[in-house]
Length: 219
Image 1 (cartoon, rainbow, N blue to C red):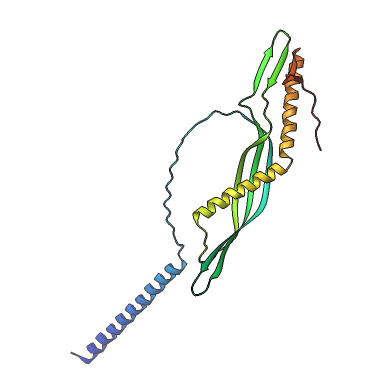
Image 2: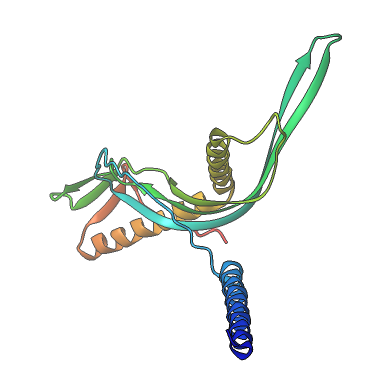
C-alpha cells in the first residue's frame, strides 16, 4: 500500500468517526428536547350509567329565588386510648373548610289545590292552598382547605356527609331569611290577579270560605 493511500484511508476513517459522533450528539439533543418540552398527554376513561327509576307528574309554582354563599367548617376528632403500660389517650383530628354556593327556589306545591265553581251564585272557591316551602336547592361545594391526620384521614363517606351537611346549611339559611315571606307575598299577588279576572267576569273569589283581601307588601 502506498503511503499516500494509507494516509487518505486514515483520514476518511477519522471523518466518518466524527460524523457518527456528531449525529449521535444531535440525536441525543433532539430526544432530550422532545422529552422535556413535549406536552404530557392524559388518557381518561369515563364510564357512566344512568338509571331512570321513576317519573312523577308535579305541579309546582316557583315565586322566589335566592342565591347564597356561605363558608362552612367541619372538624372531626378521633381519640385512641392505649392501656399499656399506662392508659394514654391520643387525639387525631381532621378539618374541612369549604365554600358553599347555592340557589334556593321557594314557592308552592300545587298538587293538592282544589278549585270549585258555583255557577248559580257566581263564586269561585279555592281550597287546600299550600303554604310556601323550599322546593329545591341547587348547590356547589368548593373545598378551600383540608387538614387530616395519618390515623384520621378523609374517606369517600366523609365527602358525602360534608356535601349533605353543606346543603342543610343552605336550607337553614333560607328558612331564616325572608324568602318564605316573600314567596307568600308573591302567592297572594297571584291570587289577586285571579280575583281581578273573576270580578271582571262578574264572579267573586273566596279562599277557604273567606273573601280574599289585597296583600300588604313588607319592605
